[in-house]
Image 1 (cartoon, one colour):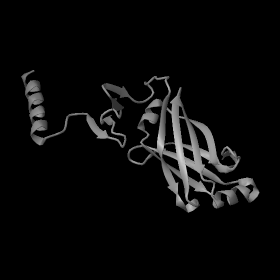
Image 2: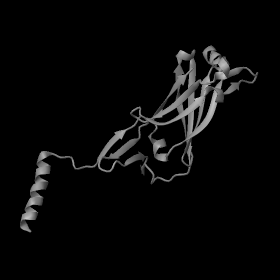
Image 3: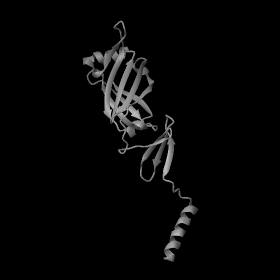
Image 4: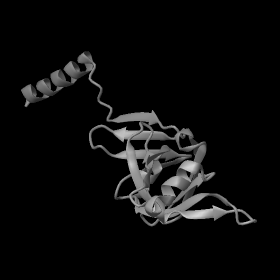
Length: 181
């Protein structure tokens, strides 16, 4: 019995002397200023929002809507077009409104070519490290033309939704858009 206790004490002392990090948590700050806590031993992620620690994953149950308006992205290659994105989360679904304005000559030409078949955009939502969390595929033919009060076209818009857990939605820190025109 005494040798077991001596062995345990020796092992603990060896770990302390070697400097092993016995803490399971690593804390990072994402682009939105939230504290993200990773348990290195279990892989569990948590987000600190205000005074609340929210555990991410399947155990999280939340049914209230969360809305965000993301910074516009300039798409100069498409003729000085600006892309905007609004998202909301509710009941396991990420809903989004993706817009392009103004409707440039390049977009009009792509739409006119056999009604834009095969032409599409990918709305890519990423975490703080730029890794894809969710994405929405938007066919050019599914976009609605937006007009002003006089009926003149001002841009294109698409509303869609994709499956997304609450935990994944909280991880989203940025977005980008890819296209095939």
